[in-house]
Length: 250
Ligand code: 15L
Image (cartoon, rainbow, N blue to C red; front, side, top):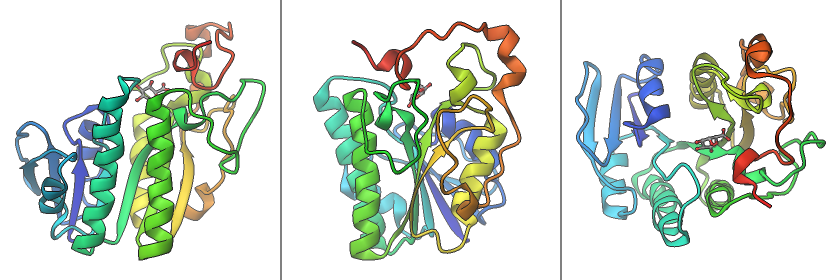
């Protein structure tokens, strides 16, 4: 691939992927609200995904996009609407207009956060968002489906669990996505042939996972880490009723 765009490149996930994805493209273009400093092999654009013009300028000349930009927890509805819903629309629409072929979208487990913890689910389970935030992720997955069916774009939607360096709480025993596995997952999502439209859970090889591995074989994703190695450290008390943890209030 010649050029890859990462939106929200200055954020938590973006900062890890920025180095982890080196070599997937000749040039990695980083988009963020603030000016980032380009390393060799990178270029930077300052822009706001809420603006279709900004998104078009950023996507122009790119073969693929990793779309991370957005609010990453619950917020007031209008903020979610503008940044996560309109922003994700702008990125898909920009990709269509600029002829970019593939989008890897950072969805979230919170699209299905109101499933009870007694239930293991696959990606065939209907959306059950736990917040406006989770709902915006379900919307992004819907955009992926629409732009694939209508316009032929390829879209891989990753329902990311907890992307942290190490598990620090009991819930991470089923939600952890290690940095190493996260990098592998995004790499495979960019490089696997003929992915069409795909939704997968983005977690490590956690033996207590509540999410099935649907679609991992299509990507060739083979996670190496298991949160169980940290079980003693995080305690054995199940504190939550729902997959979404403290996002799923009652
Ligand atoms: C997410 O989608 C959030 O962006 C992140 O902050 C964590 O809360 C994560 O999910 C999680 O479920 O642990």
